[in-house]
Length: 254
Length: 254
DNA sequence: CGGGTCCTTGAGGGCAATCAACAAGTGTGG
DNA sequence: CCACACTTGTTGATTGCCCTCAAGGACCCG
Image (cartoon, rainbow over all chains, first blue to last red; front, side):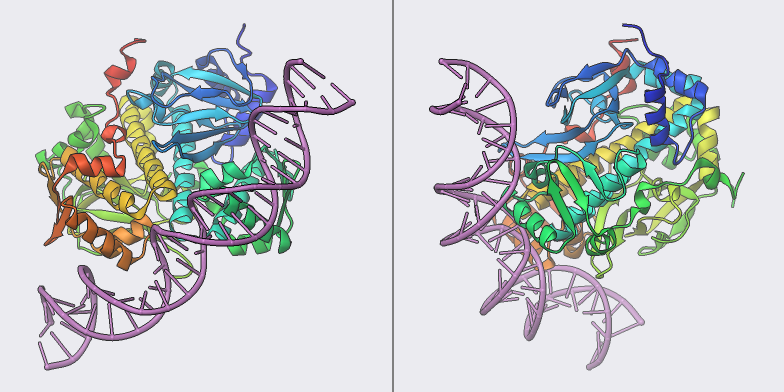
């Protein structure tokens, strides 16, 4: 299968992801695609990276949704984050003897793998592009930190509200959600595994959010009826999802 | 104050930090130091980065301990991580309009600031060094992820055990702890703020760990009496703190 | 000695887990 | 077409982990 060097679809996703901070030059995008082996389609529910196995590549997801998680010794699952189109998955896993976490698709997905060696070579050949990737990774770190604060210091109600608002905002930034709603195969079990809650309690929290006219989930579609009020409830600020562009960053010193 | 380009102390710390994955060539180290403004001493309890304020530099801590945290609207504090010598602090904060988190020293500390513009320039001038920094940052991301799992799915007892073991291991890797103990101004309030627990409960958990002959904290010194048993209790694997070296990573493909 | 920080202890309560069913929807094969 | 298994959602009763509130003790330092 030939590499579709810079198909409109894939370029669009990448730019939507990176552009808030750093618009890709067209040539850079094609360089990035040259790094990848051919993209492949993946069925829903398939494991891309498996905890405990060696992993030599990172994966660029251009379409579809995945989760990154760990199964604990007692069988419990903890979901670290939701992987959306434009995200690089497995960057951390490939640094270790064996992958620390597993990654699994939730939907039909398209992804290309970037061998680690190619990624490293990129730093030599295209340093400006490397900066952009560097920044994209650090954004994931911020989301983990916010997630951490939610689990450490917020109630179940606040956590669920925060989680849904973060998903809504991220999907909106990708052009994959409209003003108030998004469509995802989001089970209550997933929410509970991401937020450290039990399934029955997530169910009750969602009922309360529905009763209060804040959120409804129906047919795999999450609708945030009242973003203002829900954000206030969750203490949600979308700032952490919107880093400055490189020009703004250097504006004062360059 | 002149820049002490590559004093033995600072070079040693940096190498100890980066070397597990990527030993610094001597010239690279001096390049890194050239990026920094003069190092300065900081008193205990001083805020290096303040949430809500603009931040144009990242900080390399060469001596001393700090914490990165957020104060929530209700006054609660959540500690995201403990910053040890060799860590780069504030890398995430400087990407945003205003810093998302605060960083404060716990002890007397020495740190140099690296203006963001210099860091970015580094990608052009010394790509190999940029890779090493990139890797160092991704390691922090892993620690956040493990922290997240602990808060999401583990009991108070397991969390405290895990937290102390992580600190012990990190300090050992820096040569700042001996086989079973380390010295830190670690209050029970800090532990509670890092793990999402209340102070009284942390107190009770520590008592139980002491009664079980696993951990004692006395005079700011934490002693892990039985590492094996404590690790089993916490389900602690130090693997996530020990990434592969670049040679091991490329061994199969280069 | 007074004030501050930190540690400790007790009583009581609430948030969320656990356990156990059952309902509802979905896909499969007989 | 229906029986069946399976997943997902829902509800109730009970339990418990951990919080909150409150007070007191230990220690350090000005």
